[in-house]
Length: 293
Ligand SMILES: [Zn+2]
Picture 1 (cartoon, protein in one colour):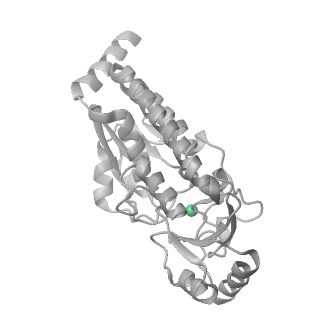
Picture 2 (cartoon, helix red, strand yellow):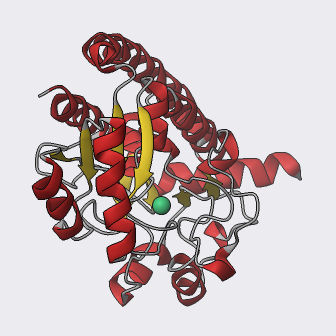
Picture 3 (cartoon, helix red, strand yellow):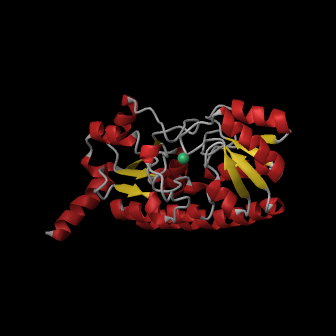
């Protein structure tokens, strides 16, 4: 009986011709495309220019989920404000959180910035820890490997193909990491302020210091008193730059820059956040380029 079910399963996926993967964010879609290549269709729900915490759950996103075979999410609470209603409306049993067609990438990495006393009730939107772990380049092959294993489970016929693609990806990625490490090494020890703790994993990976955020807490915008304290911080700590993302207002960073002369660097946090960040490789290429300019 198990063999028959197995054969039916195999027939189902092969007969269908292509696996349909939906991801919550473009960076996950880009990694998945490196593994799936022409054997399936990969789509992201959010766009890179969006605030990843507050994606608008439009009906067009529900349609994407309706016939997906696999849903890959970032997790660690990043989608908690917008994905559940979409999953309810899509009513696709294959991609429910308890189903085989669901993958939460946050289970594969160690989260940093876990708050000790705060909770969502006090306004912190990251009570589980910092969910922006994809900006540590060392985490990318871990995520790609988990996606490969999941694809193998759902589409056994093409498993070796996916594994070969993963090997090629890993090889190319490892050589890119060597390149980025060389380019980033002169910045070691420099201090930065960012709007939101988007780049903590990247900063930690390259020995750079995050000394403050424009937000009071993750999700809580700055007030005048806080901005004044950051102006003092920039002067006292000799902060190298303010890191600005593409979706928060730039006015507070501009004000701090006008008062202190500190430079502002706009960084992409995801594929598509700036035109140069076309895929997972060029996302990191562009971040490194903007840090080193
Ligand atoms: Zn966040």
